[in-house]
Amino acid sequence: MMRKLESYLENIRTFLPGKEPEKVEEILREIESHILERAEREHGDTNDTSIALTIKEYGSAEEVAARYYEGGPIIAPHLRNYLFMYTGILFAIHMGLHLLSFIFGENGAIFRFSGTDLLAVISQIPVTFIFDFGLVSLILYFVTKAGATSSLPYFTWFLKNDKTPSTGSRIGSFVAAVIGSIVTYLAFTFGPVYISDGQVTILTGVFFDSFKFALFLGFGLLVIAAVFAFINIFNYSRITKITSSIVSLIFLFIVVSPDYSSGIASYLNIPADSTGHPLLTVILLFIAVITIIELVLEIIRFWASRVVKTQ
Picture: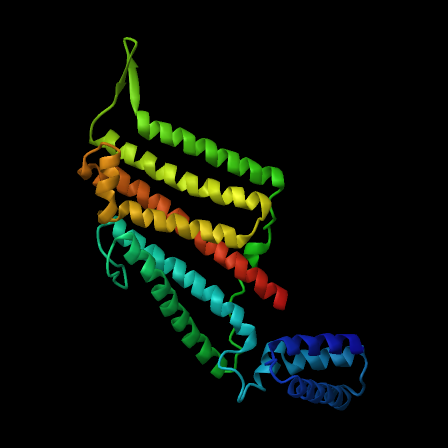
């Protein structure tokens, strides 16, 4: 009988402010007393059945804890993981919108970047994060003041089939990324080519120049993937995957930035205007969207796993 009640009280404890242990214990004793009295008064006894019914009627652990939030923290304790989860999601989307705007030649999708060179882009990252953090904090503050009982998605379904890859699989990912890096490097350095009458001839034209630029893009992303895949062999973590996606986004910013795209075109010995070919724009758009989605999903998985641990 008491085991179910004890479990219920422990769940409530996780949602109560933890800075004053004595106050928390007092609240839990009060709740326990109310439940036992109510079970006997309304159901005639304090057995397993009456306790279970009373707990169900009394409310969820979150709802009960919310009744004791007056004078408590600005953001309810059980919402703090959501704070960073939603900030991360908003930040990933926010940076993605900036990148997409760069691809289409417009500086700043919803908040203007002060510049498009690497230093300006990197300096805007913490500013963007602070803005997103503040916005999410404000929303969760109002949720807390409203009773902290609002139902927020845990996104735990993303963890349903989430398994840590085996060491062999991680080594395979590293080897594949290294091979891909070598192939794309050789392709944009010596190709594209065709053989005619035993002679190797480099293909030219705006389309092939843009394709060469796309190969360089793939090379850069594969090198980043190889570096973080190597790290994951020894210490697999979602943080590493999140960092990899962020570095990939920064690389894409550099590639599409007018401050660097012309220099990259010069390095590849292709005309600067070939970097604006519609096919290249489509390729960039596709890669950017995939990278953004991967970043959002990894952020969700990381924080969803932390939320689950606190439940």
